[in-house]
Length: 156
Image (cartoon, rainbow, N blue to C red):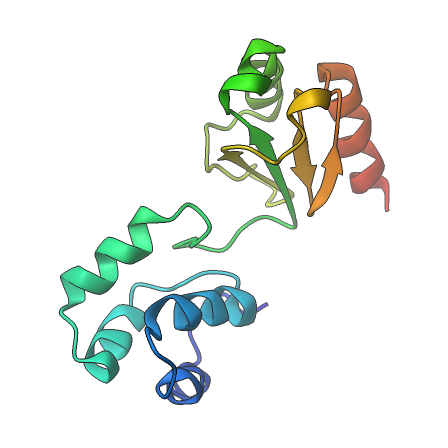
């Protein structure tokens, strides 16, 4: 995925969604699908096309966790921080993972390999703590299991 906004492609995405009712969220999702994130330079393009203020677009963009504002790493790890997973030890696993990778929430490792993000309920509460690694669910998450998943991904 390109790390720099292609203005022509951005405009094509906006134009393709203008006829939808409530096109802002579909446009933002399409930007993430196409570019991997929503670049700050896209905000005025979207605002202009939808007759919204930049603040309104920025507000929606920053409200939802799934809209990244910068490129993610090669792999994305989402650790559940909802109550059921917390009760089953997700915070301990998360602290261990973040310390091992040397990042904070929403951070990407220096080599660009892994981005770690919080997520609030994956629907795997009975098998928590849980996570998603490149959109693949991991149940009964432990620090050792997470290290194993990360090492396996890095070896491919």
